[in-house]
Image 1: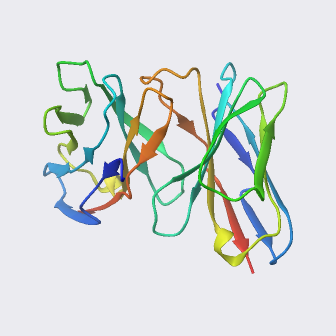
Image 2: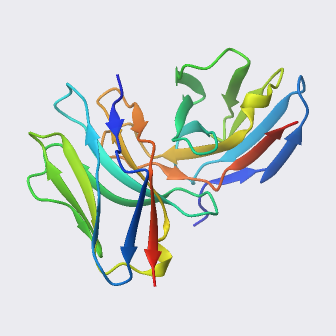
Length: 114
Length: 113
């Protein structure tokens, strides 16, 4: 069974541009989560999608947005890129919302903003 | 307020020895879950072990065990018989009743041959 897949693996952009990151969850998982991991830091929660709806978002500006498609895959869009947006962006999926449901993570997209 | 605290930025352990990675958490929820993830240099977060707030027994998964002390709000990870492949970042995380998953800042473990 395929795990969580993310594309692209690496993305290089310049300040002011837009970036689109993609994520496919594990088959059967309806919840998708996005996290930002800046160099040397822990994971910061960005967005949670479930059944096509945005359920929660972290403390990030509105230029971070996304969506979830009917097949439960998801996109993360970052507009007006800034240098500090350079980070590893991790996508995760889970089967449900219960506190014992573990998240399965992809390998991430390394975004570099020059 | 920080939900998950990992006070050890880096740890060293001799191969084949045991090591404990510390984690304390903060929540007023009665029902919550505690997780440990391993992040090798490749970047992927690998699930290691889970402990539920109502579980009375400490969780174990192979060489990993979780030392759960509910009153002290601590959930330390114990790795026995360390291997070179255990060198990685380790993150403690807590999932609360509102489906928020909080991560600590991580501990970088280096296993010395």
